[in-house]
Amino acid sequence: MIDTILDTARSLASVMEEETGALDARGRYPDHAEMVAAKRRLVAQMEAEIVRLNRETPNWVRDLDEEQDAALTEAMGILRDVAIANARVVDRQLALSNDLIDAVAAEAKRLTGNGGRSYLGTGSIMLRNGGTSPISVNTRL
Image (tube, rainbow, N blue to C red):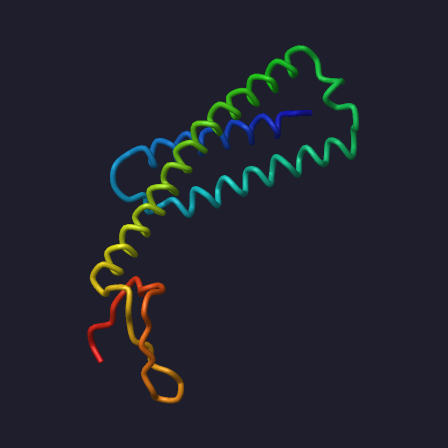
C-alpha cells in the first residue's frame, strides 16, 4: 500500500543528497536546474500518492502493519535529515549569490559615482545626483 510513497521518498532523498554534495563542491553546478526540477516532480508524485491514499483509504496510516510503519518512519526520518542538510546548503548558495550581486553593484557604484546621466524620451539628458547606479556600464555608443 505504501510502496510508492517509500520509493518516492527514497528517490527524493537520493536526489537531495546528490544536490547537496554538488553544491558543497567547488565550481559551477550546471545541472542544478534539472536537479531542482527532479525534486519538484518527486515531491508532486509523493503528494499525489498521499492525497490518493487519503481519499481512497482515510485511515491508511493507522492500518499500517509494524513493518510498514517502521519503513515509513525510517524513510521519512531520512528524508527529513537530508532535506535539512539540503536546505542549509541551498540557503548558503543563495546568500553567496546575493553577496556577489551586492559586491558587483557596489563596485559599479564606486566606478561610476553616485551621479549619472539618463537620456529622456524627449532627447534631453537628465543629470542625477545620488540614487542607484547601474550594475553594468555601456561604454560604446
